[in-house]
Amino acid sequence: MLVVDGILSYGDFQKAKILDKMLKYCVYRDRCHKEVIAKLKEMGAEEELSGEIIAELISEGVLNEDRYVRSFVRGKFRINKWGRNKIKTELMKKNIPSQLIKNGMEEIDESEYMNALRHLLEDKVRFIKAKNLYEKKNKLRQFAFGRGYETELTDSVLVEINL
Image (cartoon, rainbow, N blue to C red; front, top):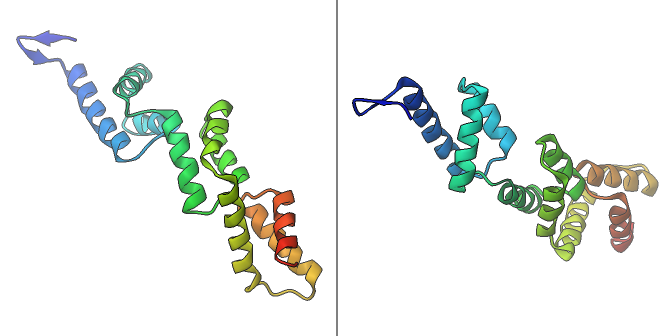
């Protein structure tokens, strides 16, 4: 750290200012590395400075991708009612390592997952307009697929609800 007569140099002041903003950014909610890097670029931080700040955020414990993945999985499943496939796809877009994604998927309880799919399909079936049962099933399959649910599970739930 360059200190002249007890005063921080401009570079250190800039780093401290960016670090403070990034601490607030990461404390507000869990973030992944890709989001933090994008924010640093947006702020105009150079690559070397970005690396230092990310290392500092990790050492402070405010940037933790494992915690981020688990939080993301819980939120997207419980609040948005997304299926595993959609959650995995979104995490892969954020360059999350596959092992972390696999660990994060453990946050989803299997019975809770099946109940969520069942409720989604039961609610949706009331609003589906179709000429016949075949068309209705296909529309429900497409709906579940769009939400990220697996085809086999969707088919088994359709049998359970007598479709």
